[in-house]
Length: 604
Image: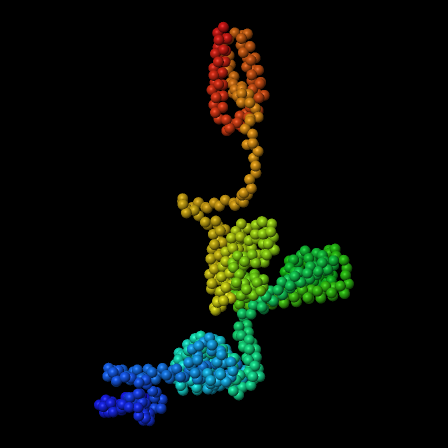
């Protein structure tokens, strides 16, 4: 402990001018000396001028000297914690000034002799066995302090608590500083120093052969890999990929076996296939019955209900099947045993797949079901690969052929792939399947990412999103989208989308402006068609007959020409409105003239 001699006791007698030899524990400061009270760690301070001493108080001088001593100690001593597969090594930095040049630091470690001038091994704590090394490596990967590391820190570093500890992991440094109260350093200089030490590790760590280091590294790598697999066996999605593939294969084989069994036994007892429709019950009944002549004496109550059993017995009496030998019946029974065994194994495999899906992807299982979720994972290769796909890809996953065919032929792309078999899409009407599959794919993509990258293993998010989709599906099915304006009770009407082609067809009707018939002829025809029949009033008999004959002839001509005239009138109605007005005025004038002529004739 450094200390200044009190002014009242020594009257600055301890600070004697001159460059004399320092006393034990003291230091000569170019004219003034500081008593160290027997402390050999006292350092020399730079000389100060007389003017400076006259302006400074003893307390200020004491604080400056303490700072200088502390910086010198910190600069002179730094420890490095280096982790290896064989144990923990503590190195002491001998020359910290050379660490400032980070870019050229590797030159100081080119040879073992140069490396020993920079750092020196202070302590090496070797692992007893692979179990201890595995525990230490696991703790380091998780950012925790293991038992062996804690022992080394207490044994070596804690003795020199004022020294800094250089580490390679900043997270581990925070834990060490919190629990052990040690100053830890992690920066680019420390990272470069660790790399250089690793290059000369065999020469810096004495007493450890290179073969032993390589063997320990290999053993620790294998042990750590096995530990990671054992640590989370439920997160291995390879089992799901294999299980769903085997399940599909079993379904195909079961289908083939059952078809063969029905066809084979149908030659002997064809009526049984119509009475018993379930495949598993059919195989059990065939194994129980054997020859159809045994139906009357066999008890099928464990397999079939009473009504169906009675029907089977009645059908056996009047069966039209052929006779078969005992050897044929034996082979058919063996085939039925295979079908029953495979069916039982399929049920067991489905339960296994259901448990695995609940463990690895609970939210995806809630959204789309076990089988659809497993098929999506199998199609993508793994859960992590599936999490990288966007929602649009998840929607059409499994319909790649239809997608590229549609892109090639420029037709509508598919709306769904494997997700079509989900329960939410299956219970939707045909017109809403596309909308529901799009919304379900969006929510399923979120669930997949949550399952693959999240730390929680609950299915709360999946249940919540499924409830939202069910509400949305109910609105779509009930047409619950209403108008904002108006009464609010009228249902919203959506017109069916129809693709309008941009290709326009040339209309040749506008090429010629010359009409097919003359306007004068058209006007005359229209006038004749519109002439009304006026009966004669109070005329002589001869004149009345002539007038009536003229009127009848005009009516006959009008009846023959009216259909053609009306059609032409309709065609030219829009094109020539002005001509029609002129024709109407002329026809009215002619009608008046005819009326006058008839009246004059009657008067005569």
